Amino acid sequence: MARYIVINAVRGLLTLFAVSVLVFFLARLTGDPLDVLAPVDMSREDEEALRAQWGLDRTLPEQYFAFLGNAMKGDFGPSFKYPTETAGSVILDRLPNSIKLGVVSTILTLVIGVPLGILSAVRRGSLVDRVAKGFALFGQSVPEFWLAIILIWFVAVRWHVVPTSGITGWRSYVLPSIVISIFGIAALLRLFRSAMLETMGSEYVKLARLKGVSELKVIWKHALKPASIAPLTFFGGIVVRMLTGATVVEIVFSWPGAGLLAYEAANARDFPVVQALALFTAAAIVIMNLLIDIAYAYVDPRVRLGQKAVV
Amino acid sequence: MSLRNPPRPAGGLPGTEASDMDELGRHRHRSMLRWARRSNRPPWLSIFIVLFVLVLPALLADLITVHDPLRGVLGDRLTPPVWLEGGSTTYFLGTDKQGRDILTRIIFGARISLTVSTLTILIGAVVGSTLGLLAGYFGGWIDRIVSWMIDTFLSLPHVLLALVIVAAIGPSFVTIIAIIAVTIWASFARQVRGETLSVRETEYVARARVAGAPPWRILLRHVLPNIANTLIVLATLQVGVVILEESSLSFIGAGIPRPNPSWGVMVADGRDQILTSWWVSFFPGLAILLVVLSLNLLGDWLRDFLDPKMRQRG
Image (cartoon, chains in turn orange, cyan):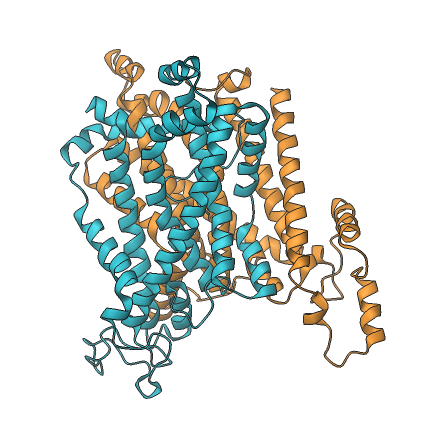
């Protein structure tokens, strides 16, 4: 078990390293930040001074290792756009807003997606099942940015139920979290439905029924527990996908989070902020994947004992 | 991002993703067997929509439109659709704030969607399948490197990368195709690697090996044909994924450059006038929804239709 966690952790670190190289060189090779930031009438001397101050006069590999060394200490350098602040502090200002929205959306996804998937499997062919399947199809096909605009149009502007943008209280969370979670709900619903259908048709569920176990207990204990394993492996992918959706949603709703910051920073060629954001995001994904791997090993003894998992 | 329908695990458990996926696939199939037997008719409505909203407009755009997709008549700007008050039969779905015909732009937008998705999926499928075949067949260090690359590329914050690249060198067709291809290949590699792992263990591959067939021949003649169906299904489902991705990137200004009529750009163009001129944003978004929905239905149907395991049982 320990060995398994260590191997996965090392792979995660390698991934982070690759992301840092990629992000750094992509950002640097595509343009000189001074083109955007330095005032047009800046003197040559001032420009050189600024260049030296930001370390832009050194070679790219030197810049990269300086960046990596500082990043490990949590220092991402000064923001180009807001020179009085560090990239880290600019991000930490915005991150809580994204995390709050993310937590609300994840809860919404789990609370709606899982029960609906189970219900859909238990009552297969019923009206609930058909509505759920239709919803799953819609959720996987609708472009988030369009849905967001349509919802703003109807719910926020026409009916005045919730605000259209920014954060002004709990009502502000309603529309963005619905739009972000709609894909996750659809995906989880589908996964749980098919996994439940499989376990409900299995021999041990038949046996449990023959023994006279109550239907509720059959569903909860015998069918749901093994059915939860498969969707778990896919959960990481769903969250990554929701993260991407969240960026677009933050832009549409002017949500002052990390996604909107990324958009602003990229447009201002604020490299330190963009790099730090990319690394933050990649780190979050890597850590989440590691947690999922651990959870997976926890529920599936075959993985835990180092055997080749499944079939 | 390439994670629509069905999502693939992003977490990497070395050597297990494939079999998990395979198992999940089988769950699906067995459970849907009864349903599929009853209704294995092709989804005609989906095929119809894909043909008439995506493929035919893309191919015939110049022949079937009369308006210029890029230059509008300013005097006719923000004309409502024909059935609303103030609508005109000249502009069936209305015009945008530059007086360009929405329907014409949607038709030309289909061309962009189809071009981008065809090219990215072609690149992604060739690169991904090659790496997936090699990793699944040879295992060992090749597999370790490829699996790690798959994990890494699936963990890339590619919206961020797209924003950075576009901010620096500006949006273009080449950039958007490169960005999407980079995210697409990993899905193909993951799927093909998994299938190859199981095909490798079959009797006929073992016999081909005993008969002295070289690896490239086994891969091309014995493994590839057996995973072709999976590739077809995956490619179909990925068209929808790519259309969504392209339109999302275009919407935030990191995709197809203006004034090209990408569906995502069109939705963005109408965003500020959604209250007064809703049709500018509404119809292009509806086109995306309809096409992606149909492609998903079509992909699901293809999966049930082409899967040999299903055919044997059914």
